[in-house]
Length: 298
Image 1 (tube, rainbow, N blue to C red):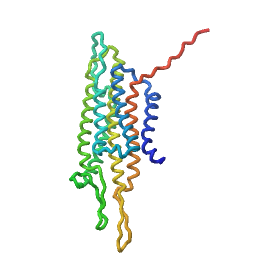
Image 2: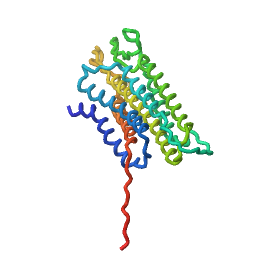
Image 3: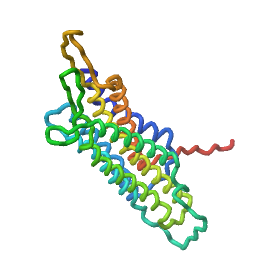
Image 4: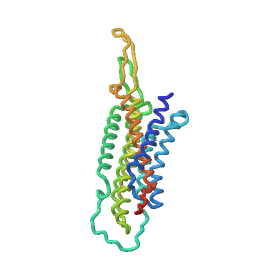
């Protein structure tokens, strides 16, 4: 029972603890946001995280009630990621009171850390590699969908489900849509009009670019967690048969040894994805700086 609860709640607990620690201990210099931007930021990070927390908890406690198709579970984080990016793309309300000339040329990289591009690129590459490998290994099931994986032991064939083309192809289209949406959102950030307070405006643009990177990588991580969980279940396929020469012979998938590592990686990627979503929502919460009281001379 304890292991069951740990698997269900462990990634959620880790994210709920890690996100506030990062926000209020490390990212204390986040600039304050306008009311509209703060609300959109909280929704962009909070709704996806809440959706997956509820699905995770109720899915484990009521598996007979909540049975979601793997295609839906694979597409959901990508769809939520696209919605989150669209919300973060909305520019803050203009507060210009006079004409301001901004002569320096600003590009996307003026506000966007290259680490977000590199991180998203690595995650996309991993997802593509796993999706293609699982798709190639899949076979048609009884309905003709590529969701079946089988191994042969003598005259016996054993099979189970796998993250095949039937599941991965729609998700790959969703993956492409997420990458395109995030790229457009990043490109829009330096193009909007500047406010009078250029320093604060630049800080807000950097925060928006970072948050777009966070929700994009979070969607990729949670999607990757779904893929790893499915492959971990496929890796657990085992069977045995009796032979006249060797007696009882047992076998499993060629990647059976990776089963525990796949499940562990799935939990960690889910925890990291939820952490990034929650952290994005928390950047909408202002942090008051501590002020030191003046010292009176005696």
